[in-house]
Image 1 (cartoon, rainbow, N blue to C red):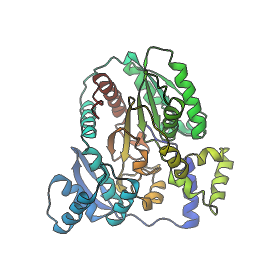
Image 2: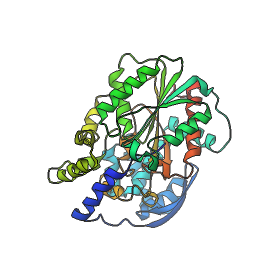
Image 3: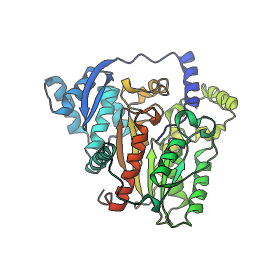
Image 4: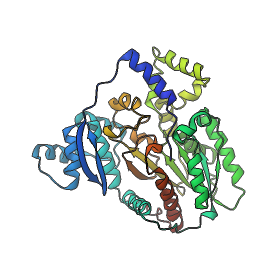
Length: 381
């Protein structure tokens, strides 16, 4: 449950800051409240975001002007999960933090999401064992960008989660992707790895973070369409940049492209591999993909407020604010897979390893997945 290596984005954003000027500072308004039973104590970017967190979401309607505006938003919001365009409009009309909280509230009020988040919280805060025997499962961990060189910094190499999985009794393997490969190349390598392990009697789980997300989506959709083996049971999408990172697109504009080329040359990275993760390329690819509906797909989605941005996202997050709520690398709704359940990690951004309880949450998530698979809890969703 770890994020993507920050160096490519941080390097580009440093250049952007120097040449284009730093983004305007974000207001820091203290706010403390509860969302879905979780205590939130941070700063937010507007008074209406503070009121929404502290009062409106907890049933206290004491500001008539704000109540009218917020209630009108709920009445006029047609989609259960707001689209990126809707969230951008909400961010413009209210604030980015308000839009982030609104998304979290909408996700948690979808009945199936409500159930899985309640189950996750229960498993996280108790010592209850898993309902299923982990030894009947096999997990393939799909690492993030440049995991060989820098995975130890952010956990994108899945070293610690794999230790926890082994201690849990879950057989697991790391899919050795090209460290800086593009989406197509990574999907091909993953497809071969899946085929290799299909010979066992184990039920397979695919786990991937960040740049692994679009490769997993493509591998399960394209390489196995119509021939989905029954042994592939679940995909755990940990902040996958399924519809790309707008940061890459920012540097594909002709007068900025030389920055991207310079960084790729300096790091010895394939420029085409980087651009395969752009929002433009990824959204086109995303729209064409469909995976077997019998595969359980669970998103672990970080939803940070402006006062909760980790050290690795402090440069990235401001650049994306103009497009709406983001986790420091991608827009929030662009990290949600189709036909999926979503665990809301309020307060986390793209870099889950910065969460002090991440190891406990990793174990709780493993228990949760097995419980859902064995009890068929997701079938009605």
